[in-house]
Amino acid sequence: MLPQMITSMVMASVSVKRLNKFLNSSQLNAYVGREEDPADAIVIEGGKFAWEGPEAAERRKKEEAEKEAEESKKKKKDNTTTTATTEETIEEDEEEGSGLLQANGTAPAAAAAAVAPSSDQNGNATNGNTGAKNGGTSKATTTASPITLSGINLKVPRGSLVGVVGAVGSGKSSLLSAILGDMERLEGRVNVAAGESVAYVSQQAWIRNATLRENILFGAPYEEGRYQAVVEMCALVIVD
Image (cartoon, helix red, strand yellow):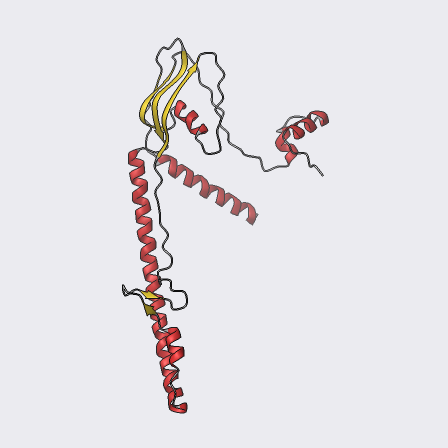
């Protein structure tokens, strides 16, 4: 019972986050034309597309800046706590050193020097063992350009079969999304000939919470020969 409740809560949390992101997204402006074209079914001229428009990009940069400011504030607070703890430790060592000086006539200068932080030329406290600033190593954050596709010129003649080939992450799916009107058009023209219908089957990999056989059959009756052929074609056969 408890594992099912935890799973349901996690799924609900993920769903709420996705709905929140979807409902807060900016509206897309329709840019795909439906003009008559006797020669070409799809035309893109001088296309430049992005997954987010200038307003969304500006909002994202603002959110990242706010997040970075909060992290910087938190680091400063942690550094203050660390410095206070170090000073308390030095005071304790000095008190112990005074006791040793009274007993032996010598001061533990080496111990105090090991605990005390040194300073660089700018007055920033550094750790004597590593030479790194107390603030930790700074991590440079760069904001990627919102432009996903640029300089796209494409013509698909009527009745033709076209394959889009490229490496992973090269923009094949983004190109199809641009034709469908699911991206932000920054520049250029997109036209799908009037009277032509568009069907799109996205590459969305997922499996059911079931066995491999049940995922392959998907409710269909089990046929040994056909099932083995599918397993082999999917490269799921274990080779010794």
